[in-house]
Amino acid sequence: MLTALLATAIVSAQAEPMIQKLPESTVEFKMIPIEGGTVKIGETTVEVKPFHISQTEVPWEVFDQFLLSGEPTAKDDRTEYGPDAIARPSRSYILPDLGWGHKGYPVINVSYLSTDMFCRWLTSVTDKKYRVPTEAEWQLVAEAGDWKSELEESSWHYDNSDEVTNPVGKLKANKLGLYDLLGNVGEWTTDLKGKPVLCGPIFTDDMADMTPFQRRYWDPSWQETDPQLPKSRWWMSDGFFAGIRLVFEPKKG
Image (cartoon, rainbow, N blue to C red; front, side, top):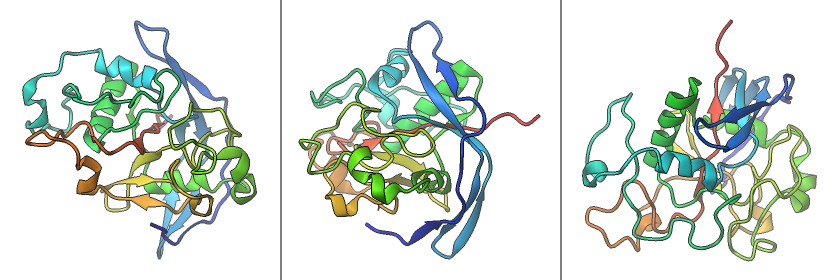
């Protein structure tokens, strides 16, 4: 789905990137500082404050630390969670990475609930407020630089992906040093109304659809082949295109 969106300011990374290390492991990832700017979404102009965003889509070895941090229970698919609760996904009846690759490959098949709980867990173990990007934050960085002329060098799409996900950070980064914003997997964000939405084109999209304006809202077809009743709230059996990119807001002062 194409949406008429336009970033009206150029953003740039001013401070040094931050390396986030996860406790009791050798796993780490890089967060890129962004100045902020102004984005127009439809008829709405949004002022975006400074934030940090992960250099790549979250790979499995980062998400695995969350999965291994606690034992899931059968009730996890049915319980309502408060704003500070942290729960772990129930076990998936499918191989979550579909056998396409694990270490260095982007997380896929995750629901927004899984993503939100992952961010809550990450916040609890790092003392930094991690969350998914807002749609405006994502749009701002996705349109940075001359993205149209760099698509062949920077995006995984139908013609070069072999119709599977590819390891993160292997193609050309954009002006801000961010990888795979266009192509590979879509990335969970929240729209202007706070509703979960996947931003960005995916690896099965045609080259013509490699734009920052692609949006996907959850649809029952994303879990069509899930035989469980009720269907999993954590894993999407047909969500091979649904991934994660992280944001945290720097502390004031």
